[in-house]
Length: 198
Image 1: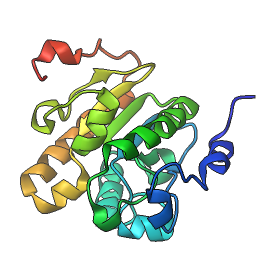
Image 2: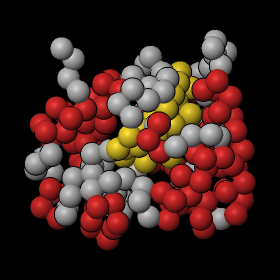
Image 3: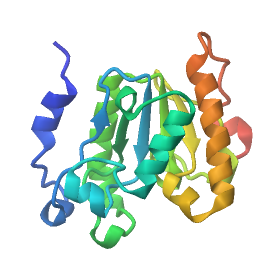
């Protein structure tokens, strides 16, 4: 039998493989539908996520819920996770060793869920999933080919809360995301190297 998300969570819930294991309140594994076609990947838990043990529960999460509703989806129909499962102190940027430790957990979640589309939220998650340094202004709202799924980078909802132009781009990208999910046969995605983005 293939491993379930619950079984995988039980394996890693007490993870102490990096220093964040000592400073977190809760390991924030992810939430949603184990058979989702759409999976969102953010950067790392923040203050409220660390307290509640669930991703995207603060203001950015409320915006994400509104954006999902705008394309006829509920949080329960998708899967939401982060690259890091533990909050970095003071919400600082994740360190390279933390990324290296936690990324295999994320890839295991993707392998279990088998989403049709992995939607990366913001620079950090996009770079980890694409495996390259990219500019969000160039890649957001475009489709890339992943291993058995499509990768669709968009601005992080937190960035949209601070900048109105990002919010407009995010709303437009959600409409593109709806089209991508609705297609029976997807067009061949553009490979990153062909776009002159790197």
